[in-house]
Length: 343
Image 1 (tube, rainbow, N blue to C red):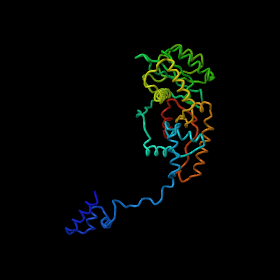
Image 2: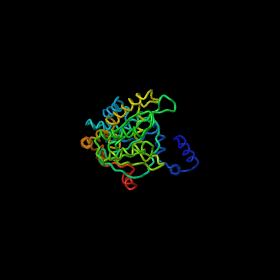
Image 3: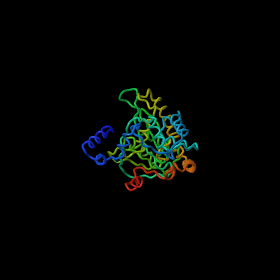
Image 4: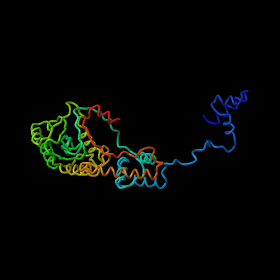
């Protein structure tokens, strides 16, 4: 309600014989408010704000430094969740992820490619990995070729503990013999001992073919399969494929040739294993975790945060960020374990 209208209503009430205090009470105003509004030189709103800025507010120099980082070539395509751990690895703390997101919104730099469908959880047999080369997941996905209706086939094997891609190949067709050869090569490259590894997959032909089953038996690898007609029992491979196909630079047009597809996949694997900070493993790279270097990295990050909190304690309302190591990774956890993880 505008002030002029309110003052007009009060004036009409007074002229009709009502008391001004009663009219103000009906309108929910203090009697002194109309008096203040009638004074000359009063603007629309002269309520005073806070006398001092918040104690945890960034200084102009700090704000400028964060903006420079957010727009730097090495960081402008990364989210704050990826930027903060990288800065911590360099021994630098500028601001929290929430502060960076707030700056991105303020500067209108925060843009999303598209919305994602919420994940749906289904839980078959549980597999637990407490170190590398204990549980692998693998699958095959399509890559478009120049021929309409024809595809190249990308075979990927990922270690669920470290998220490292331990085996990859691109072929012109699906074949259990090619899949078996890839698993054999990956086991040799990783030095897998018989009886140490479980390999999870869906129920496709190359996964359950006689050649693949015989190969796994010979290697001493335990086979694990998704439940029939359940499409999301292999979440690590599905998540990896989504990361691959939403990676900036993934061709919007078909690959020109098999060699072009292989070159792009090689570049993706190198980036994913050695440069990508994975959110599920405390933002270390898969290669670092696979080599069990993550504990030292996370300890160093914790020291950076403790130092930052000691320097500016007023900016911290509670504990520092949790940089503790993820000790166990579960494939299709039981309901009890899933509840503990959500708690």
